[in-house]
Length: 138
Image (cartoon, rainbow, N blue to C red; front, side, top):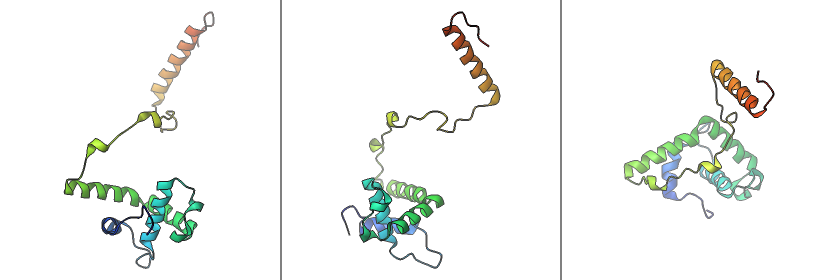
């Protein structure tokens, strides 16, 4: 076990929320979970995952499968629920910093009704007309 790997106590909480393989338990499931956590803890590329965890492409494939199946989201919800049952939830530790979450509204998937979009485009055109004296707006 390397520094940062999940402890036995943590694994007892995590393991029931991970899926079984098509033919039963996945060999080295804990090792693969630790590899995924190592990758995100360090921010390294997948190819740099230490070989002690196994083949990087196998680990990446396992991560993609879990992510697409919603395993991580379910695991997070289960851990929050378990912490709440134990009385270990401390919302003072929650922090949201919008300065690192900036995105153009197109990137956020903003949907505007066609009527509203027309009104906004007209307002922009009028604004441009006011800024460009002597040039009429549309």
